[in-house]
Amino acid sequence: MDVGAQDTRIAIRMDDITKVYEVGETEIRALDGVDLEIMRGQFVSIMGPSGSGKSTLLNVIGCIDTPTSGSLRIMDQEVSRLKDKDLTAIRLSTIGFIFQQFYLIPTLNAIENVELPMKEARIPRDDRHRRATQLLAMVGLSNRMSHLPNQLSGGEQQRVAIARALANEPDILLADEPTGEVDSQTSDSILSILEDLNRDRGLTMVVVSHDPNVANRAPRRLSMVDGKIVSDRSGPMITGGNVPRGT
Image (cartoon, rainbow, N blue to C red; front, top):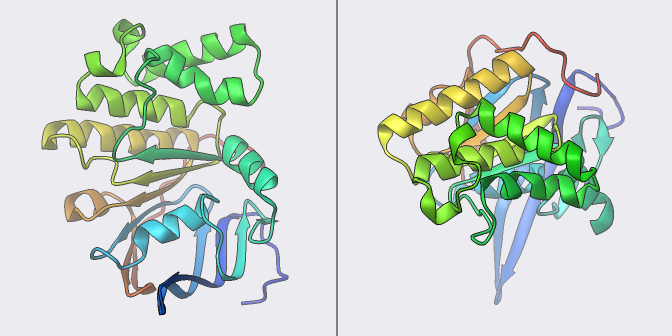
C-alpha cells in the first residue's frame, strides 16, 4: 500500500505496524507487521487466543499505545508520530472506548460519569448535562441517572459506559470484551445497542472478544495469532443512515 495515498472513506489505516516490548533480554512482538484498512461505518470484530495481540491492536488504534514502527492513520490523519498531547486530543474528540471492567468513577453517579469526558473537553455545564441525560435515556437508564456504580447491575454499568463513550460524539467506537462481565441475556442487549449505533449513527465499530457469539455479530471478522492478522472474513457492511462526522 502507498502510505502517502489518502482516502477519506477510510476510518482506520495501518501500514506495517509493529509493537515490540522488551521484557528483560526477551523481545516480544505483540504486533508483527499488521496491514489493515477499516472503512467508515464498518462493524469489525477481532478474535484470537490470549497473547495474540488483539488488545494491543485495539490500544494502538485507540492511541492509548504507540506503535514501534509503521504508519497509523485515524480519520485520514497520520497519528503514529504525534506527541502525547495531540494523541490525547484525538482520543477525546474522535474515539470512544468501552472496556470489560467498565472503569466508572465509583464516587460519581451515572450522569456525572457520562459528563466527565465532556468536562475534560470543556463543554459548558448545561450542554453536557443535557447531552448526558439524552445519552442515558438512549441506553434505557432514565430512571438510574442519580445512582452510583455500586447501585447498578453489571449490565447497567456497561450501558453507562457506552453512554460515556458517546459523550463527545466520536467517529470511532472501540470495545474491548464489552460483554465479558455480564450474563448472556445482558450481553445480547449490549450487542444490540452497539449494532444500533453502527446502523443508525454510522459509527465505525471495532470490537475485541474471545467469544465467537460476540465476534460473529460483526459483518467483518478478523482473527489474530502471534501478532498477525491470519484471517479476514467479510459479510455485508452495515452503514448508518447518518453520515459520520468529518466526511
